[in-house]
Length: 379
Image (cartoon, rainbow, N blue to C red; front, side):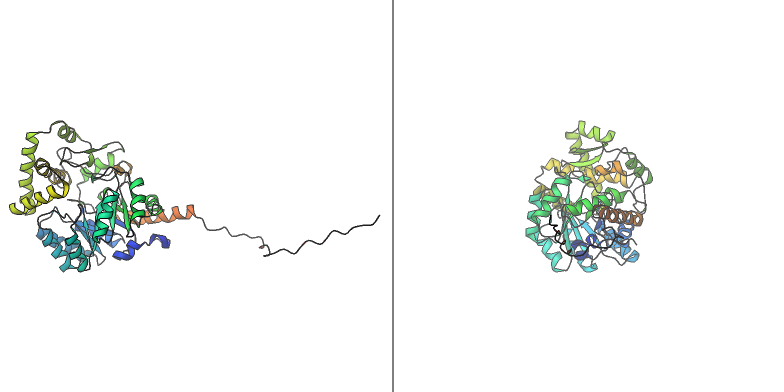
């Protein structure tokens, strides 16, 4: 493994017990056991996506990760999902190291997980959100800038991250636009304790996304993404496709009906009961201030994502992505990716603060003797 400066072993590494301050986020339909285990085994922190799994599938995925590596890993959950307490209980029983959240968790849930020894880490998109969850006792936060994929905020990473790190005294990870070692060094310079990446890990060999879908991501340019509200009423960054253009153009009653059908289909796929689905809708309405139409539309996101990420239907699904997809042109293994990030970060730090060059000339004495007084000559 690459030898790296001590500055790369950050408080986040100490908090969760990992070698490198690099996190693979819990992307729905993408972050399964293979990708999560590969990330943790390579020295980063892998995070399973629980919200698109049945409870039984999540149990099996946790066991699969454990069978592949003994390194720490996490599980991502939504505070408004219908079985959140059941999932929390599973994480506690299985000794999962970290619980991350795509939506703000409740203070009660944070307390339950922390009392059981889990690290809690929500994602936030505004400084005021960071202050709120820190007051509730979370252990770390991911500050995701506008460049990030999927649901995202309005503040660019370069402005959000330094502001959040100056406001809180817990480890902050930067997300949105990161993909290499130079970005890791930039995040550290802004006060972060590491970086979290989704799109870059999606585009690795261990990612279970179909090859034809990965090819579409690799072909995208920096201007091929768009932030849209047409999918579920909330801003979401995706690759622009014909479907996205259609959704943007044709919103109304039929979109609402189609969303309701998707909600029922998602319930069958994830094993969610109808009462749990209603409770989840109520939670989303309360937490996000959504109308009932937007709650129904929210079913579009996971189902349309599944169409592409699982079934490989690029043009009939949605492709959540960070803007950084326009810079990614290769599919390394997870181990190769993490090692390259660490190596480039190390080289960048050396370039910014090079070691003093050794000199072959003898060192000057600490203090030179005074020059002798000039000798005068009488005329």
